[in-house]
Image 1 (cartoon, rainbow, N blue to C red):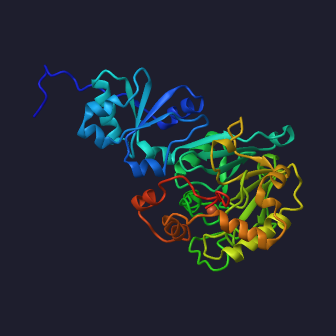
Image 2: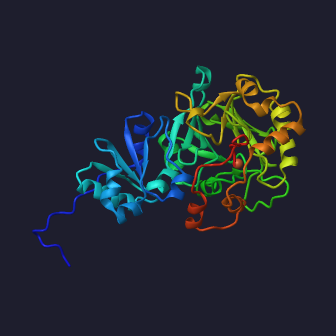
Length: 396
Ligand SMILES: [Fe+2]
């Protein structure tokens, strides 16, 4: 039935976008997060920020069963934002709170929006490097996944892009550059790579190495160990990206040394742990390979080399500049697994530090090797923060 002209208009529930909310949480502005997901969803995946996020958990069904009692659990006089899985239940709860005179806003898109939000941060470089190129770390906050955009002289390389490829196209266009290569450090297990799709859309070469034992059905342009890509030469500003075979997390894992000073390590080495070598079911073999990589392959790199990984574990790993990075020399001394003397002891330590990966990881690996999957399946498999490191082993 049509509304009569005399009916009051439906009250609008204020909405806040994830991209506007996260900076406020990062600054510790005193926002109170009211999470209305069920217990299991709440326990398995939470919103995180650079400051602790003050959260109250009152499931949506509590509001349905006894709204008054549920609302009594929401502290008064606070700036409340309401969160659910997709933004629907939270909108209803925010509306109920508003009606009861409690100011509240709905987080648009809920955890789904949080899980795909991308935040670019410029990696600080020494003056000599900054004159030649810019390097951006793109933080997929909800999954703690990091991808990279390297720009020099109007050309760009994208490394480990997530599947939201339009974002990367727009970001590179804003920098007045064009993508000339797309690279993955390895066949990811925790998220579906956007690499093949981005390369296909732009008509540029794509590279990932799956390694022995995997049938890769994605078309790739091979990039051998030690091979160098030159970037930005059109405008006389050339930098080199050197591929380094760094097996262990996966047999094909490849790191990229940018400008001789910044090392994109993928899930080989993080800023407080090392990658887990168990995801293929060969923890001893892959663990030994990872030990060799960390202790021999990376041994010649200078202490000052800046390590930029593909994942992180938590806010404590983010620098004041907002970037996840650390000097290789520091990691050699501070990461416990980097101080282990023998391959046997390393494998034992790593094996003892890892838990079973989420079941969805096997599905995601299949998709990244080239198997088809629907958008709905992928979205479901990608739910949750990465479980990637090998101490709390980061790196899937
Ligand atoms: Fe990985």
